[in-house]
Amino acid sequence: MAESLGPCPICGREMMDGPSVDRHHWVPKLKGGRDMSPVHRVCHKKIHALFSEAELARLYNTPEALRTHPEIARFVKWLAKKPPEFNTRHDLPRKR
Ligand SMILES: [Zn+2]
Ligand SMILES: [Zn+2]
Image 1: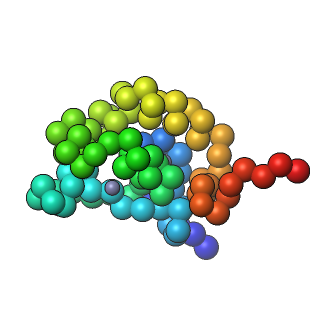
Image 2 (image 1 turned 45 degrees about the vertical axis):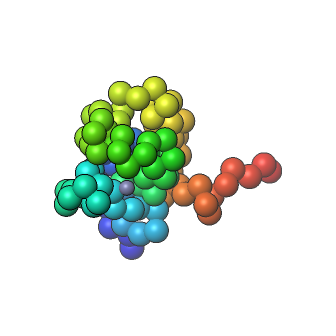
């Protein structure tokens, strides 16, 4: 049974321990950051697709800051209806 890791700091949906969850360094390791926490893999990928390590370190080093970005806000809204273990790599939307 997957164990719940609590709400995701990005999207607020529950995280189930397993392949749908990653760890994110709020300040990149290269910049000396050690503070990391679980986030959904889909949320994690979104963060790194949108921002460079430098931007993450300087401007978006808290979940609050990330959620103020319009692109993240839109993503979170879209994600709200997906199941907790939704993972784009394995669960591509399929037409029936
Ligand atoms: Zn999430
Ligand atoms: Zn990361």
